[in-house]
Length: 480
Image (cartoon, rainbow, N blue to C red; front, side, top):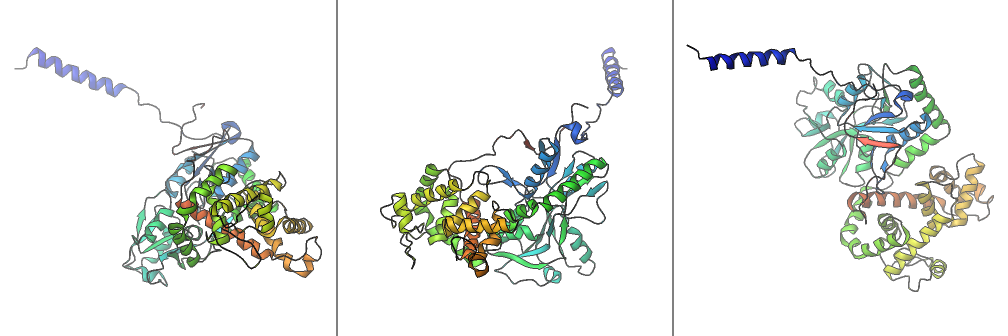
């Protein structure tokens, strides 16, 4: 027979259960965004990758997608909020739910498009490729991948290419790796932890300058178009504004210059050049690093850019001498050394500090309207060819309706200074301008390598910008 206490406990538990059932469930969180003009910000989904979005050596956000979105947001007159997501699958899912205004993540145009998603205008071509370690046999086609460890980023748009080949190649297997940055897979390939990696051609181009033992084995398909993805239910006027934006930046050359900024110099060096530089970094750089860092304190120029310049000039040889009389680690002329008060060009400290001051002077001589990074690339060209010839190249750019303040356009006019049809029409005459283009592009690549492997002199973090915020999660619109 039950006691009163047991009966009370039973009824108390029953009452608690009934009360719990009667409580209303909390309303679901609404993550949908309003139209941009009502939201008062542009919400953009992206992914971290060397060809889309990252933090650069100056501690600033950078990447082709980042720059494009910043320009579009400025045109819309609103700040931008980037949301970092781990893969394309989640990107499309959140976009279909209207949790962002668009996605800019190096997305290959899919046919058919993902459910409830449409693509904007194509602005870049990428090629799906199989990357391999050059210390191993080079595969010729997918059949050679059978029985090997093949990695592909989780949710990759190239995954259907493998799935479609599987029926004819039953031994073909692959692993989907949940990395936020696809470059990590290529690092595993370089370390011998994978046999092959399926990825984008542009990512291989970036990473082979850091790991000269990786390269493209073969292409999986013809080039594919890259575009922004937009919710299908987005307002028509927003889709039209995206279309108009790309028409404008293609017409005025902005798109071409941005693509060149990030990809134009990537294939300038061959693997032997990269390997030689990496070996010199291990054997020579430590001896002179303190002088490069001192030069950064003196001029504000990143020591890794100065070191890249020194490597291009002399391979960090303080006794280097050319047949034309330029000498020292930074290869300064007699006139430049005298102008800078350098007594001994063969002294590595004097040479490095002098070269840094000279580059700083050249940057300051350029018109104030020239923005970075073009300002630095043009100053490097001046370091090599001289201010007079650089101005001749800028004059040629103006005559040809090109932008004299853009390095991308000067890359096409500098080589004309060795052509009689052009150099006879400018003040300073003949110059080997093509060599100057190679010089600058090499310095850019060497700088990229040093930025990858050498820490900054002072730790840097992305600077505060009230026009840009970055998070790794979506948030509800509390104004709804």
